[in-house]
Image (cartoon, rainbow, N blue to C red; front, side, top):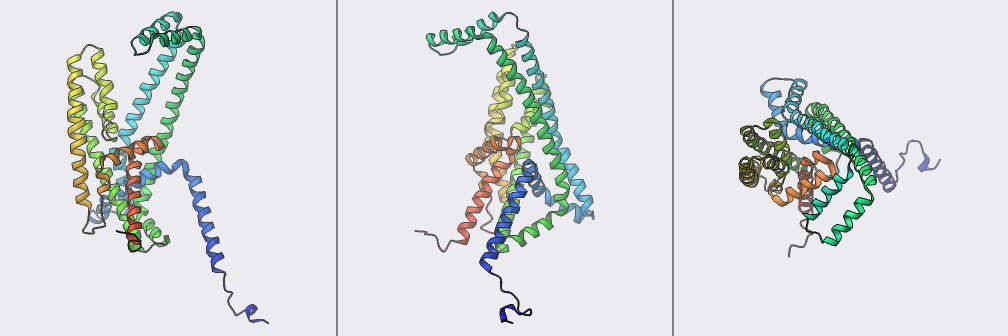
Length: 380
């Protein structure tokens, strides 16, 4: 019998083909998991961020209070639900109800409009107030007059579509939040084992794995704590002023807290319409004071002065003696603003957290590349 076919002689695998086939299987497995879990990825990512940022507190519960991992994970999950998830659910529910009422009233008004000439005259008045040439104004009025029924029908259908969109998006977001709460418990309890598995399976040396994992943990912690702290301060500030003016201070305070997740321009989404409402009902003094307070205190002092200070302080606090442990990416206002807006456009409200972390982690990957291949780069 030839030596190569002897039963006691181990077969030598064709390593290039074996490695290529294994890489193909891994790629298919990752693609399959991403395809399967795509609807849940935003919620899972938010759960990972929250669990990573609050994991030191979970560790203290297990060590200093002598609680088991299951009890500590349950306590932390309940705390996150009460402090983070519940206010968002309240704001979402209240906003959805208010928006639905507005949409239904507008739709009923458009459907029951008997005298379309009133609508035409209103549109003429609006067009005349705009800096549009008179010839173009007359053309628009003529087109609107000749297509009144079609425009009314399209407007009512559009409002109905908007109502359905508000309802569907609200339900999808509530489902994501429920997934976040469900995932947090297992991330707290099984997080260390997951990290060990990641370090084992990646082809990078463990110290490079630790570099990326520590960077992600630091960024998630700094981003979460700074964002929540600034949002609470802005929410309390705005709620105090609206309470003085006799408005629904709790709703507007929570709205400002959530909107302030967007740096620089987030608060304007809330205080702009509220100020306009005060002006429209004849309370010009209150409206002017609200504009000044929101622009100076909330907009300038808290958002543009206090936020960078808090991020810088937390960055210094969570940094170590390792010169590579650099968390200053989140201290860049332009990067944070653009990344936050991009995250909102791609992931909705959950992108408030995703955008800055993704951008900062991309910078960390570039730094890791420079760290590994620094001897081969041209430093001239």
